[in-house]
Image (tube, rainbow, N blue to C red):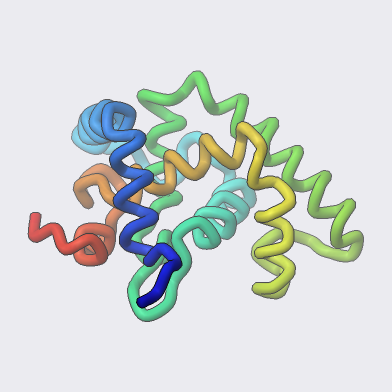
Length: 166
């Protein structure tokens, strides 16, 4: 019998521990989607690429779609443009911290997305205990499991992973 957690169990535990925040996030994101928020509003293209790369380490692709395929970065952008706009500056500071830490660890690198998969994991482990990483993790899980019309969970990828039939 395997003693490790499955990806599904990790997501279930994270979802349970953040249920109230996820419910509020989904409601606000739904309202934002109804107003027609455009492609990237709160994040620049470069910031979105870094957020997407880190979110893809939180919920990786593999035998099932991960955060990238589910379009989680679009949910996060909508969140930062609407119901979580007070966290926009925290994201900017977190992204600056990420950039500085990445340059410290990998001086020749241009971005997190350009690092090898192994180096990306080393980097994620180095910042895992930060407030920024925790905030991004909550947004990633929320965006992965929210109804698709809220900007993430493209094609119901998150729902399929946990067996939810919509």
